[in-house]
Length: 472
Image 1 (cartoon, rainbow, N blue to C red):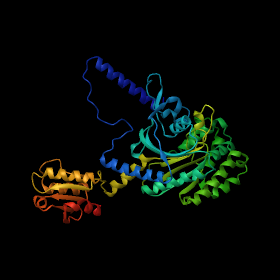
Image 2: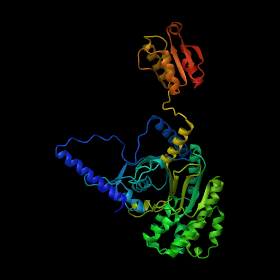
Image 3: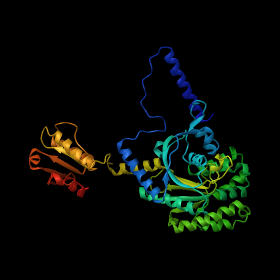
Image 4: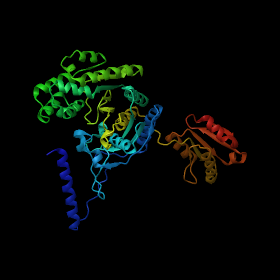
């Protein structure tokens, strides 16, 4: 029995025990306050960092001309079934809701394909940022959750080969550089080339996807573990498995294409020759888009999802002490939309997904090490008073500031010491303070204080907004 199945049975037994206890009049056990397994709460500091990350990613997507969509958090189960290979077991199923069998979405790609087929849309360049759900074994230290955000960018439509694919690789590179996550490498491979390699190694065609799924685990497991799985679980003989092992240990640059073309056994298979032609064109375009120094041709890259049909890619961080696995991935999936179309009309697609949770973990760890405090608000001006009973004057001034679009706040206490107000501004990183005093009111002036330098100037009340904008 698998670990997942054992965990499910234990959960069922605990639920049954709780129900029996209630029926027998036992007092309910103490409420356990924790987030569900594989999830987490995000406090103000974490959310401030998270929104900064998302804003930077969206800016890159928009720079490349994308528009955005949204889809339901759950789909009909039949929409998701048969699209993810062995990972289908990680789909979260929901109870029967009025005759519809539903599941939480596993990714944003399959719902996107369903959206295209339903709307009979033949071309679109879209991004979609939303939560997805997987009944996976979580590892929160590695940024692996059961509920997490995906940031997807996809180009759907009939276009010339490899032009959109190369742009997707450029977008991953731009996003990672914008986020300042440190050094990274984008691994490249091609599904057709993998199929050619499997055929050359004597893998029956009906086992291509199963073997591919095992190869996909090489980023987490050693070759000996993967080899054992291919032989014992996928039923392949040792001779063929050893041949695969020789191929998937190879990686390099464009020179690897020439080396593989000299492999007479591999070149007997059309899928291998087509795969290499595509990779050669992709390298040419990557060079034009100035990302060749960031990519590596890696034959061990498999990406186990069933829907990929062409180029596949994955970005990994290569800095010291970074153990989060891939932070971006994607590829071409030309047949997925056709699965939803009654006439099997296919719409070619290529896309990428940025692993924002893992990126967030890396940046959070980096900031903690550096002792950097993240601002949790965007308040620009704090309105303070120097004497008692001036809270109404504060409120009048706040109204003027808000009408002018200035982000401003005050203390909610009627009377509060000036020092306490100034300390709050320093702790919160608020750059400017307006101080109202009885003397200033009589003269029609205000005191404007720079929090960082602690310098103060008197300004006429009529020039307040103008002076604030000069300093922000």
